[in-house]
Amino acid sequence: MRLAAFLLASLTGLAPAVQADEIQVPTASDRIGTGVGAVLRGLDRVAGTTEDLVLALGESARVGHLVVMLEHCRYPVENPAGEAYAWIDIFDTRADDMIFSGWMIASSPALNALDHARYDLWVLRCNTS
Image 1 (cartoon, helix red, strand yellow):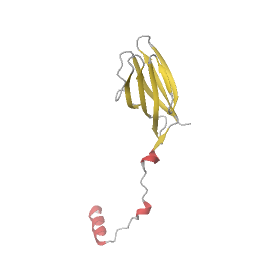
Image 2 (image 1 turned 135 degrees about the vertical axis):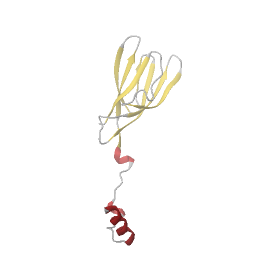
Image 3 (image 1 turned 45 degrees about the vertical axis):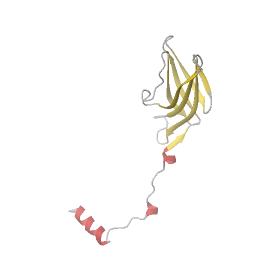
Image 4 (image 1 turned 90 degrees about the horizontal axis):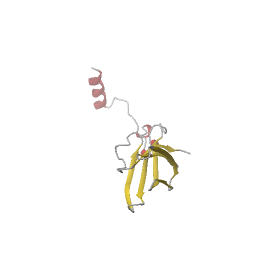
């Protein structure tokens, strides 16, 4: 019944008008922050050791014979500790080849994972300051 009354009022122009300047739609830049760096974790499966890498944007570090470069790190502004998206390039010095280039997601590391026989690498979080 209320729906019918609202439809009738809106068709006749009696419904309250919503002005466009009252509606504020959040943009992507309002919801996504850019980190100044990231924390990654590397695993050497043969040695059974892990190593945390703290990288600033544009920096690189070594995990065994891999060189890991951090290009971007983004996170949701509402929950900076809950999620991270990092663009990582990984170069294998033995094969002289880029073996990974893309986004890694902290909550789903297997979604776009490094495919290497010895090493695993994943994103833990973005550094916000």
